[in-house]
Image (cartoon, rainbow, N blue to C red; front, side):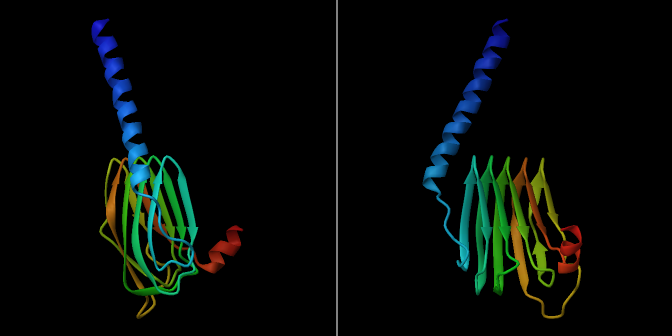
Length: 155
């Protein structure tokens, strides 16, 4: 019984510490960037962030989630040369939608989670390139595109 009680106290302390740390990090790292920003630094801790970018020269930036989620739609953005996104998630998720004519390269890794980077459906010579790197720990990163035909068919 003593071991069981100690285990419960340890578990509650662990989760209370994790919640406190997340609250502190949320105050220290505010999200920066809006629909017109060419560079973003999005942070979602215990909440969610949605962004539809219409940037004229999107260079990339960073995204971080901790028990949260980020959804970014880049289909109306114009990609700058050498654009790079650094994506990191801890018990959260990041979903990015890109135009079908962009070429997306990824070096992102996952542990206890997943990374899904779907290549564009149509290879276009001299297509804009977006480099993705980062890490998912017990979370997920998804980057994909849909052609306008597929999207109108699904509604």
